[in-house]
Length: 252
Image 1: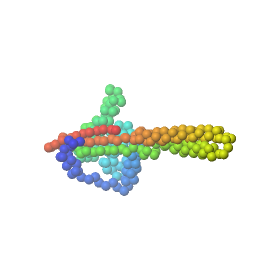
Image 2: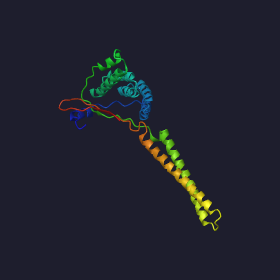
Image 3: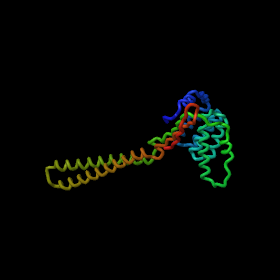
Image 4: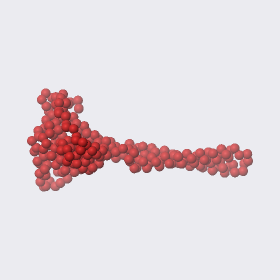
């Protein structure tokens, strides 16, 4: 990323701002943002279509294409990218769209027989007159689901707490029984009371150990749950006069 040219960064900084989102489209955009955070890309796509119907801005088309691609519908994604390119966006915005079209085409080609003719929509999208030029760095992050919504982690954590509390109670009852036996003035029943108390102490310790293990397993589950580190980073660039830029694409 240190190789990104100053010329490319200057062109990004000088890009005109996008028009504001209309009040009628803002609720749909908010719903799409929440859906992206929850990785519910189908719901995000529906919300973005609704936003574009009431406020036909190109940004909604690009976001719609991203949602369709991430949900695995490359054909719908290519159509949305092509619609976005048809609005003649600036070169630095057109470049990521064309790159994602090529990515979707490769995925479709790998999933279909070689004898099948290429999709006319995909061919039209890649032949769009928008030219590739310097593109600024763009970073897209998809946040994971909240940890407290993980059913497995919650089950382990709650079970662990129940075991810990139960074990502590059983251990305390056993210890109290031993103390009462030792405080007795007679020997009758002393040995049986101490034995029963020690048994309860051991059971309580076993429950607390199991509870600690379950709580630990729940914490590990929260940290390693599916999608906890789902982040996609796209940095776009191209040769420009007096410098150059670097393209880095990753998914973690």
